[in-house]
Each structure stands twice: as structure tokens, then as C-alpha cells.
Image (cartoon, rainbow, N blue to C red; front, top):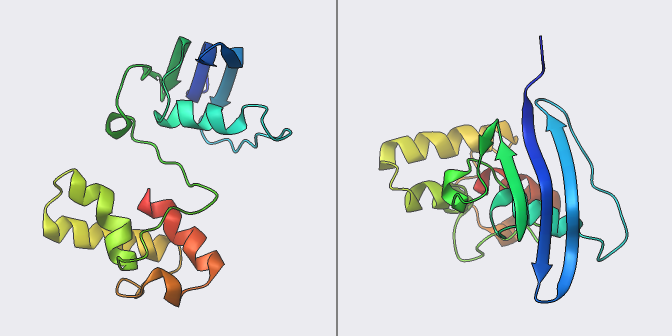
Amino acid sequence: MTQKNFVELRNVTKRFGSNTVIDNINLTIPQGQMVTLLGPSGCGKTTILRLVAGLEKPSEGQIFIDGEDVTHRSIQQRDICMVFQSYALFPHMSLGENVGYGLKMLGVPRAELKARVKEALAMVDLEGFEDRFVDQISGGQQQRVAWPAR
């Protein structure tokens, strides 16, 4: 039985103007595997993640997620999330609103949104924190909230 790949980059190049930051990279991440991108500052780690998430478009090559070519799909159509180093939480919104923001933008019905927010917060051990604000929780808790919020 062959193992399915979750993420695959095929001959991906990314240029910003005349500056090539990713040059013909091939990367395969099998389903269920954890991977760490290590390297010095400026070597392209964040650019690779931004390409996979759809925040950047490759200059050349293809990106596959779960076996499907997503190279030209929008961020919303990729069904993948990215947690930024600075967590990117909205300080004026409750944790529940932060977690549910993407679902709200997709037009998910309110009852389903509330249930999914509650489930997501429970998954990161923050059940019951829906009404708290970012400045009312620790840095570690903010990081955990950032994952389901994206």
C-alpha cells in the first residue's frame, strides 16, 4: 500500500522581481508526518510556508495538497492553515470571535460556528475561554488559540 502525500512541491520557484528566493525546490511531506524547516534567516523557510498556504503564488512549478493541484487556488480553497510567529490575533475581538472569524467570513451559520469554535477551543485545552480577550491570556495560550483561529 502506498502512502498518500499531504503536501508536495514540484519544481517550485519563487521570484520577487529579479531576486530568486526559492529555486526549483521539490518537497514531499507524507500524510501524518511532522516536518521542521530549519535554516538561517532569509533562506526561504517562510516563503515555502506562504506558498503552501496560498499567501504567495509560485513563479514556476506546482503545489499539491492531499493529492490535488492547488497551485492556482485561493487561500480559502486550500483547507490548510498557517500559524504566524506573531500569532496574528485580533486584540479587539474575544477568543471565540478570533477562532470563528474565518468561518464567519465563509458564511457558516451561527449555530454551527458556535459549536465549531467550542470544539476548536476544547482541542487546544481552552474550553470556556470564548469570551476572554487576547490580553487576558498567557503567550502560550495565545499560541494555542492562533492555531484554530487560522
